[in-house]
Image 1 (cartoon, rainbow, N blue to C red):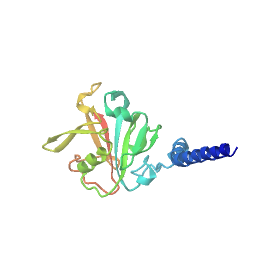
Image 2 (tube, rainbow, N blue to C red; image 1 turned 60 degrees about the horizontal axis):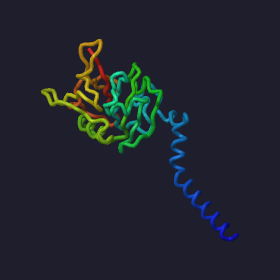
Image 3 (cartoon, one colour; image 1 turned 180 degrees about the vertical axis):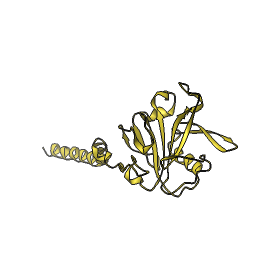
Image 4 (spheres, helix red, strand yellow; image 1 turned 60 degrees about the vertical axis):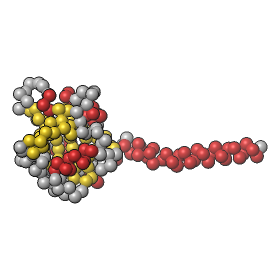
Length: 204
């Protein structure tokens, strides 16, 4: 009788420890399944951080838009085609927003992609881009050529703009800075403390 009572106490204690240890993860999954997470996105449309997590306001962010139709399974970009993924400075996923049309001000088309943010104190755009994409352990590898006008980015996450075909003459990765197309290349871009840089495919 006492032996059964002791065994029940041990089992109850083990179950309690498991629940306590797993509670933060359970709580995180529950939060991500509710609108509470989505409400943490900045929704002021004239804010350069519109559509980004509120904790990134006035921090440095890079976003890459991937046009769904151009991403194939052999590209690491395929890891980011189920909505917009948000990663912090360590490369940890914050959340995925499946309703990502129009997010971050710069996308009129149905695109998906990834934003990596929460950075501070970067001044050189190209250095920021390489270091920010590097936190994804190769998922956002950047391919570029060094030219007379500085680095020319042709590939992000396996999607090479030079190889795209369709009803257009050519394609390239277009760079936006705080809501406007950048008038300088990434090698000459001077970062602000609230810089949001965005890359998306453009055609001519």
